[in-house]
Image 1: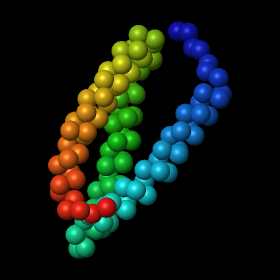
Image 2: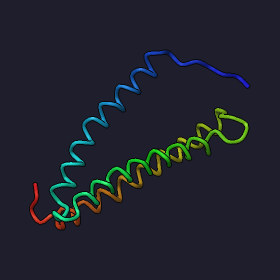
Image 3: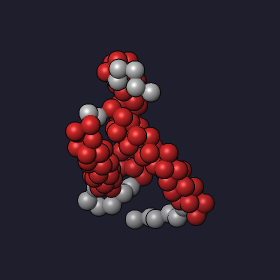
Length: 111
């Protein structure tokens, strides 16, 4: 099996982009949970937010293990797995984009 190394700057850049993305998303999501949840259910909503983050992290680990398979990651398995992941995320984004007007309507004018 042939292993190739990637340049350090690639790994560093990916970590920086992911960290900045999470630092930007987390406060906005938590703020929306506290604004939109009924007062008596704010704690449950915050728990749901953190649970969804945990489930997402778990699913990404499962996806990575499926892509790498039993014998380790090959170029073919990586290409097919991440191509599938790309199209699955595009489809999910489209569903979320189409559902955005319904979510806006359910927010009852909360900004």
